Image 1 (cartoon, rainbow, N blue to C red):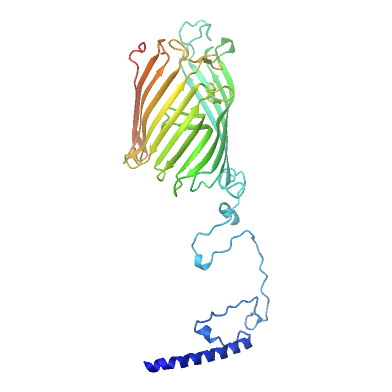
Image 2: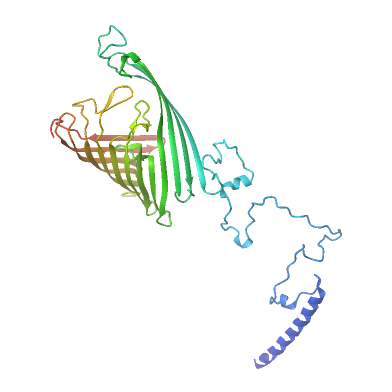
Length: 445
């Protein structure tokens, strides 16, 4: 072992001498035929690389004259270079991931609704994160029907008849054109938009043919038919993403303007598009969802049912707070608790046809003021194979006078609805029930 230790310095000196001699020879040669450096062979120095564009020895096929390599031309200056070998299969950012298909030659007309289109939000309008969605809907409704229609107190459409009811045949035509513009900023694939603006206009034309005068107009001179048109503002709101509260993009947002809202899954209590302010969001990977909202209702055009922004808002205020919980108490079932407060102080109003709408044409026909609170539970989902939807409300409040009595009255009522169904292949068996409490004595307080 001692002999080996004595030999090591001598061997190291010999290697250094050979390396020095090889290095000097390598420097003098300056060509590709030089014997490889010993330190390169032993892995001490990196091996030389060959660059054809910088080499003094032209690269050619044996037996063929030298030909310069073709000049490299950039075909797509915006193209992304291929991934390095050590990053094969890794995620690499690209400048515009929405237009990757276009770079591959898949291009479609701007008016094509069945493929990628800027105007339906498939691609940003500016190459970044601003999107525009244009929507158009045409809805046509034609209904021939038979409805018992009372004769007018002044005269009837068929002189000589003495019955209480006249002609029963009616024909209704309703045509709606709905145009919507939705502009938003953000990446909605994984998180809500940062900003969003939306406007929806509805254009309505309606015509009804009846057999009796005063069926559609208070003035019998206007005849038995009516043609009407209206333009309503159904949506006009702004949405601001306030913050993200978790890595899973649980969020809080604020929406202001004319916006659709429903207090429960079936819209039993309130389902409309009204001006208001709404704070909403979620928690725990979207298992908890909440809404806190205030609305002041608009008048409706009677013949079209659309919002009438040309009139002052009603004295009808609604406060809503609700909380949703997914997968409770069963997996696949969503529960909701809600509280709604309604303050109403509407006065008397007649519609565009001349008929009274408020107060209701029954009882004292006096304007009422009331404050009512609704407490409710709603559920929707499935328990195994059984689909189940339930709604239950308790109503408590006070009004300045009743429908049939002038003194102020208290309000206490209840409502319950449920629907269960089960699918058997393409057949769905369904059972529904609804209950609403009444007033056994409408003349008491």
